[in-house]
Amino acid sequence: MTEPTVVVSKIAKHYGNVQAVRDVSFALNEGEMVALVGHNGAGKTTLIKLMLGLIRPSSGSIRVMGEDPASGAVAVRQRLGYLPESVSFHNALTGRETLAFYAKLKQVQGSDTVGLLERVGLNAEAAGRPVRTYSKGMRQRLGLAQALLGQPRLLLLDEPTSGLDPASRRRFYDLLAELKSKGAAILLSSHALTELEDRADRLLIVNEGVAVADGTMDDLRGLARLPTHVRVTLANSRAVERLKSESFGWKETVPGTLEAIVSNEEKIELLRHVTVVPGDVAALHIIEPTLDDLYAHFLSAGKRAA
Image (cartoon, rainbow, N blue to C red; front, side, top):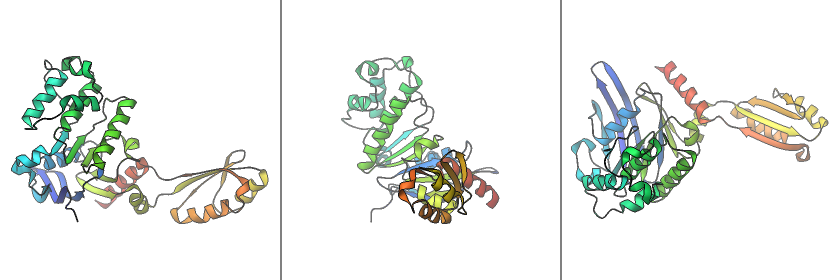
C-alpha cells in the first residue's frame, strides 16, 4: 500500500497560552482532494504552515512525502506547491518574468512556464503585461501557476478561488481534477462550502484548533444524523389525500405538492409509501443535508463537547 503523502499525528501548536492547534491527526493520500474548512481563527492557516515547515509543532509529528517538512529538504520543497490566500508579486515584472523567477527559485529546470500560464487562463498578451496591471483574479491565477511549477505531488491551497469569476473557477477545478488523476494530493482551505460539496473527496472541519469532523459527505451525514427534506408532487388529489393520511407529518405547501422532514431511518420507509403507486408521482425530490448544514452541526457539536 502506498504511504500517504501527508501524515499528521497528534499535532499541537501553541503560542504562549494560546492554543492554535490541539491534538489534530489526519492523512492525505495520493490522488485525493481534502477540503479544510473552519471559521477564521480556527487553525487552518496554522496547519498549512506546519505542513510547509514554516513553523514547528509544539508536540506531535508531521511527515510530508516521508520527511519532516521543517528540515528544509530540497526534494520535498521542489515537489510541493503552495498558494497563499493573499498573493503578492513584484509589480514591475511581467507575468512571464514572475513565473520564470519562481521556477529558478524552486530549482525547476526546463519548466514550461508559458504553457502553465495558458493553463490557468493567462494568455500571451496577459503574460507579457506588468503584474501591476493585473486584476485580483489575474494575480490569483498567476499564483496558481507558480504553485503548479515542477508538477507537485502535494498542493496546499489557501482560499484559491478568491477573486476568480465563475468561468475561471470552473477552469480551476477542472485543473485540480486533472492533477488528482495524475496522483497529486491536494489540501484546499476555503469558505466556499457550496463549491466544495461535490468536489472534495473528504472534508476536515476544524474549530478552535480542534478537528471536529473528518470524512466524506456520506460519512459526515451518517455521523450527524440530520433530517432529510422530501418533496413530492402528485398527479391527482386522491394521491395527495392518501399520502397526507400517512404518519410522516406531510404538509401541502402548494396544491398537489407535499413536503416532509424525516430522520434518516424514516426516509426509506417514507419512500416506500410514496412509490407504492408510481403513476401518482409526478416529481420526487430528496434534499439531503448540505455541507453548510453539516458544518453548522459539527461546529455546534464540537463546542458542546469542549
